[in-house]
Amino acid sequence: MTDNALNQVLAYVIALTHPDQKTLLWIGEEKAANVQLNGATTEGDYIAFRKQRDATLAAPRLLYPSLQVNICAGRLPAADVTGRRFLRLPISGDFRA
Image 1 (cartoon, rainbow, N blue to C red):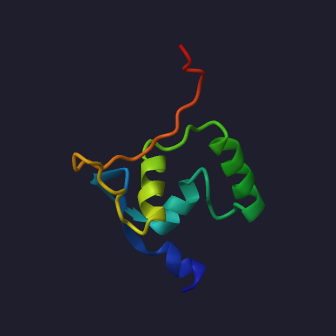
Image 2 (spheres, rainbow, N blue to C red):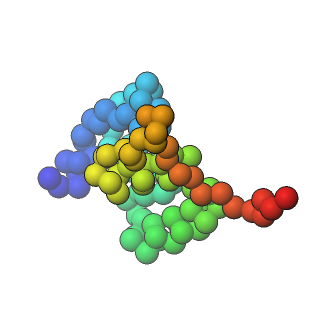
């Protein structure tokens, strides 16, 4: 598909973070208005932008639980003696009494 043809495509977008919010957009309009990635953005520009922006963000809320399940191919941890399953979450700081 040529770049010009791609600009004419109408896309139906659903964000994983807000699955109830659906958006219909033209690819060409999105490319022209997108701050992170537009028609003039080079690969180096995009990488620099993401590194600068990502340095200011905290880890996603479900990153650690999802990693634990995904690394185990979708299997949850074994149940304890009461039948409950637990995921471990890292914490930081000095918690000594």
